[in-house]
Length: 106
Image (cartoon, rainbow, N blue to C red; front, side, top):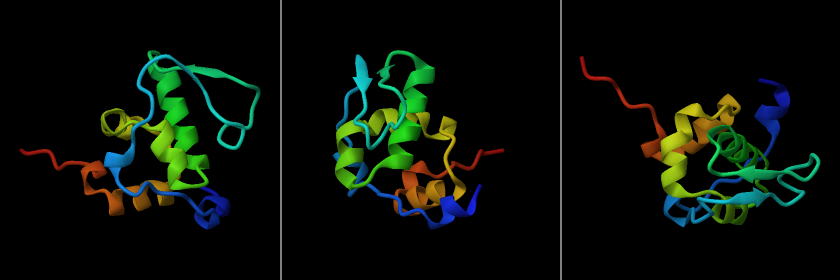
């Protein structure tokens, strides 16, 4: 990734238990999280869901942004699919061990 990804300050949730965002329906993110043209993410569409989570995690300015837009169960389920800056993924996994890749038993 770029030097910007290393230097950018990222928000982290207080706890994954605080992630109580929506799990169904169309969601339009606030402008500070999604800078493009207004778009309604369909949480029932796997591609939209992953894209919305990536945007919220990368652009959140405070834990409240994460608490309001992400859902704990959904995050745990799609975490391996998210395309995130390496530094950001490492920060989340350091704070929340349940997001770390599990060793596969032989």
